[in-house]
Image (cartoon, rainbow over all chains, first blue to last red; front, side):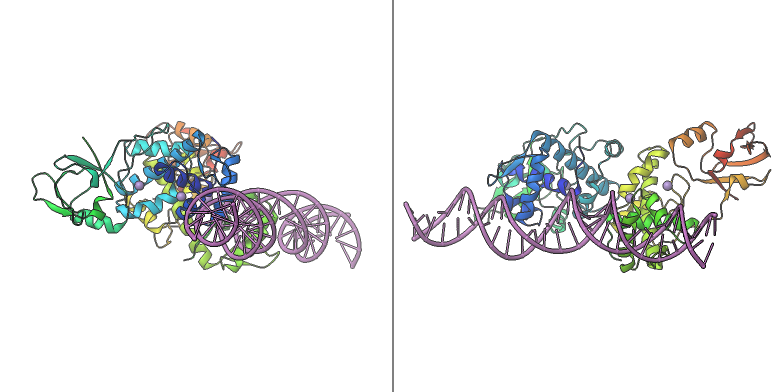
Length: 220
Length: 220
DNA sequence: AAATAAATTTAGACAAAGCTAAAAATAATT
DNA sequence: AATTATTTTTAGCTTTGTCTAAATTTATTT
Ligand SMILES: [Mn+2]
Ligand SMILES: [Mn+2]
Ligand SMILES: [Mn+2]
Ligand SMILES: [Mn+2]
C-alpha cells in the first residue's frame, strides 16, 4: 500500500463518510464537508483519480474504488482506535476525542496501530458507538435503526449517536442514556413527535424528536 | 504560544539537539542532521529568525532564542513521552520507538500531552534514559559521566545510552545492562581501552571501548 | 426550446518547503 | 598577502495544496 499525504487522507475519509449515505459524492458536498472550496476539490479529485483512489468523470461526481475503500477503512480504523484510547485511557470526554483523533489518524505506522489495538483489547466500537475496522479492514455493519423508527414496546440497545457535540452529551448524561443502554419506547406523541422512553424499571421520561433523530438502536 | 509546521518543529528540535554539544550551530551541521541540503537550511533559518525562534546573522551560525528553547522543550517533551508510552504500554523495543515518536511528537494538543503524562505516571526519563521535560518545560539536567571516564571501583548507575540502535540493544541485553543498572569498573586495559565491569555479586565481564563510549552514568 | 440558475471545472496566483547550480563570503594554505 | 578551499547564501525551479475569478457544463424554469 502506497503512502498518502495528510490532505489526501482527509479527502479520502470524507468521501468515505459521505458515500455511506448516498452512492455518489458531489464536488460541493465534499467542499462543504472539508470546509474548503469546490475548485480545490476538483484539483484533488484529479489527483486521487490518477492514484486510482476514486472513480471520477468530470461533472459526474465520484466514489471510492475498491482500493480507495481499503485506504479509507485504514484511516477510519486509526481514527476510531485513537478515539477509544483517548476516552478509555486518558479519560477525555466524548466531544473532545474527535478533534485530537483527527490529527493522530495520520500517523500511519501499522505496527503502532496493531499494538494499540491489542493494548486496548481489540475494541469493537469507538466512544460514539461507531464500529472499528479490524487489521484486515473488515468492519461490522450492523443494521441499526433510528430511535424515531423503533416500534413501541420493542426493547433495544443504544448502539451509536450521530451527533458528537458536548451539547448532546450533556443531555444524554442527564437522561442516563449511553452506548449500550437498553430501553423501549412506551408512547409516541404526534403533536411534536416526542416520545416516552423507559430504561429498566425506572420511571419513564420524555425524549424530543431532535434528540431521538441522533440516537441509533440495535436489537439484541 | 504560536503554532509551528512539522518542518519548522523538526528544524527547531534539531537545533536544540546540536546546541546541547556546541553553543553555535552551523548550516552544514544542521543540513546533515536533517538529511537535507544547506540551501534549504538557509531558507528555513530566515523564516525561524522572523519568527524569533533563533538568533541568526548570515554566515555566523545560529542558536535558539529563549522562546525557541521553550518551543524545542515542548517538542522534546512530546517525543519522549510518546517513546515512553510505546515502550512501556505497547511493548515496543528500544530501537523502534524513535521513528514512531518522530511523527507523534507533531500532534500538539496540550491536553493530550498532559493527560498522557498523567496516565503514564509522570515518567522522568524516556526509554533511552533521556530526561522528559515537565508541563512547564523544566528539564532535569543531571551531571552524567561517560563510562569511559568512571573511576575504577566507583559504584554508579547507568543513566542513559546515546546510541539508540537495535545493535547496541542486542549487546546490552546480552550483558544484562539496562537503564538503572548499578555497576562498577574493576579494571581498565590500556591496550584496547576495554574494561572489566561488575554488576552486584555476579562475575565480572568485559566491555569494549566502543560500547563504553555510549553508556552514561550517574552517581546515586 | 430558450433562458436562467446552479454546479463544476479551468486559468492563473500564491505560500510552503524542497532542490540544483552559481555567486559570495569566510577560512585555511601556501 | 595572495591563492585556494570550504561554507554559506542567492537565484531560479519544482511540487503540493490552496485560493479567486472566469469559463463551461448541466439542471431547472419559464
Ligand atoms: Mn484528519
Ligand atoms: Mn467517533
Ligand atoms: Mn519529527
Ligand atoms: Mn529517546
